[in-house]
Amino acid sequence: MELRRDLRSGELEYRRKAVASNDGTAAPTGDSRAMLRVGVNLVEVNCMVVQADGLPARNLRREDFRLFEDGVLQTVEHFDASSEGASVALVLDASPSVLRDIGEMKAAARTLAKALEEQDEVAVVSFDADAYLLLPFSRDRAALEKAIERVNVARGATSKRGSNIYEAVYLVAQELFRGRRGRKAVVLLTDGQDSGLGLSWSPESTRPRAGDASGRLTFEDVARSLASAGVELEAISTQPRPKAMTDAWLEARQKEMLITAKAREMEIPHYTLYLAELVRRAGGRMYFLRELETLSAIYKRIAENLRAQYTLGYYPRAGAGKSGWRMLKVELPGRADVRVVHRVTYYVTATP
Image (cartoon, rainbow, N blue to C red; front, side, top):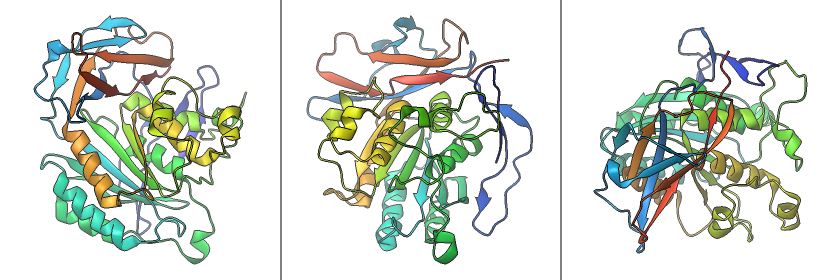
């Protein structure tokens, strides 16, 4: 992975390379330099409308929605009520601490294949210290099962090299989702204990170091890459859910950084908070495997949520403007009986 940071804009330049395959080879994707940019391109916002009984609201129309960026009403230029196929990347931690029951994971893949729509495309990536592309985006469900079978748990010397969770997610966002439209999601199965970014309780550990042009990947770069591409994150933690990290606690903090001194006092592990923080930035949901649900049940729920989504696309009225995070809000006027779930931010990258 070749990275270089522009010191003026703070953006990370990325030279495209393929994610390595499981046998060490790499599929060619070209070698053109590419900056992460949104500019005045179409911004897509996936949302789910939930009724009081918890079921999704169907048959809504474009004119039912109101979409705001930083408080400014936008014109919805593109509308999809889940008729177009979704792009789903399964990103699986292959370190020994995670895959204690590989049989359950493989059974879950079959559940996912059955729950997805025929037009949905699935990719599979596993990772330890490196990321391995086991299946590019495909509608072939037999190929999906075979890819899951090829996931190898790291052993021996390989297992001692660590688990680069966020680097794997960044590569997937750059290599697999570039240029894709419509509903896009990463389904990440991991314990959250990353070895690569040096994350700590200090928020400074998430950002580029001042004057650092080396191209060191940071958490902020990963969050920006997902948010600018409109890829939501469904994170499945294999760790127990911290008592304080309830769904209500997370929902109440959608607009604020989760890595705080208060959270530390609540005895929430910082590596679990970072997973939740990435979900907050990209949109999606945080799951905990050790709760009552099985992995198959979680995969089924994710597939059902994708089927119930609406995609709203707009061209920002303010154009590219200044780079940075923008706030999003979607409303259904006159529908107090429903709740709209969507990502609350997206990121505009700097243009030259």
